[in-house]
Image (cartoon, rainbow over all chains, first blue to last red; front, top):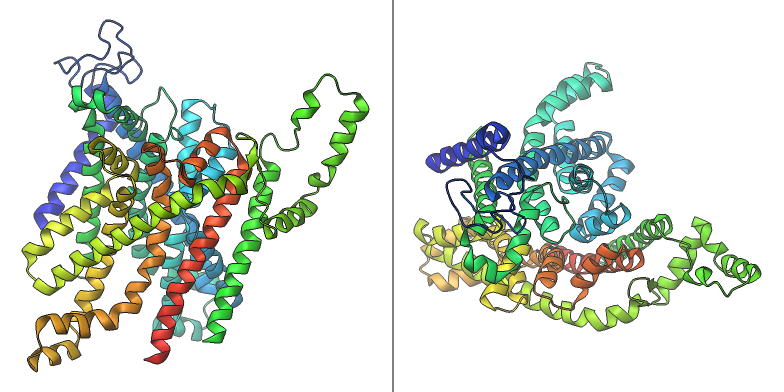
Length: 269
Length: 286
């Protein structure tokens, strides 16, 4: 398990560094078109060939990875913060408020969230600029993904609120605000961190699904989801098997996240 | 038992009311709401256009619109699709059987594969046997459902089995952990010490006591399967509800999107409630 964890961490670090340093690492940009090399096979200049518009697939993969790997954690952070606010308050206050929030969480969880995502996405303009589409996609993911972590955080806060040290602090006459910030929040940090890391691969996969359906990041900005759209043509994939590179990278990154998370779960406290 | 049942009914009703309110608000605030194509007809006089607007005036009040929407929902009127120019209920009648059929295959297949592999993993108990299904489930969880659908499309396999592949890893992980915990309990060790056959121990003393918890998997599986149905139906070109929702999202057809989402939330809640009832019945008898 230790070897697998180390490999996963190294892979995640390498992929993140390569995507962040795409501008220095690679000569062409994701939108540069080479009209002389349309649908070109792999070469030293284009390691993954070029697409129908003569764009370098390797450069697009590097920049697409940056979009997915930067914004999925941002969306995860947003959803964890929302969950902490809703679940933490419910668990801390208890009573009727907790019942209401729990019912709300159950309601939210019973909605297949891709349906909800599509419903809310349809409310927003579809002909937006690429950067806006990226922000909309990940903002929606962050805003709609709060329910599962909220349930865990509510339960965690509830058990912490009933813990001996909190009861003792209450008995000493500590104020509710101080109790919350000094005794609950620091103890909730591991739960919040775990929920954040669980959400990252979920959002990466959701973006990939949305992108493949044409409802994610818009062209010319690449993301893993939008790059997977090329795979829809089986004959093209048969002739150019290197087109599956984004899918392979996506699977490797998500598996790496899972391996890191599982090894964290098994680490004795 | 009755209070539990009433509690579930109350939750379903609240879901319908809140989901209805959210849906009505989305439809009301959605772009293009209140625009009637007839107003564009150059042959109509100003009075006729005013009459058309007056006809829809009641819809401008969100409270009245909500009540009107709920009354329609109670009558089975799910609104009108602007992009397909047909009632939503008619579209659902056409497409729902296909999706439900796919979901039944997918959920039963996913539960069957996941549970079967979990049983084998627990029964044989060797780490080597756990490795293959563990890796398979890890890869399936890491694949977006749309990519699973693409693979099925390439190999010419029916799309409904792609749903099974989305459901199976979640079932496998949950069932394996549950059954492994049950397998380690003292009564199982006692049964083994008494010399009972390993299969009898597995089914009578491990699977049977864990059956209600395993039934709870149905609720999770249905939610997962509904979510996976959209990309799978789109990629495999299956004319089901998932494909309808995708088309509605592209055409910004909110009445279709919102009503189907509310309907599916209700169906999921009913399945979840049935699973919860099975669990609470078991706990009360225990």
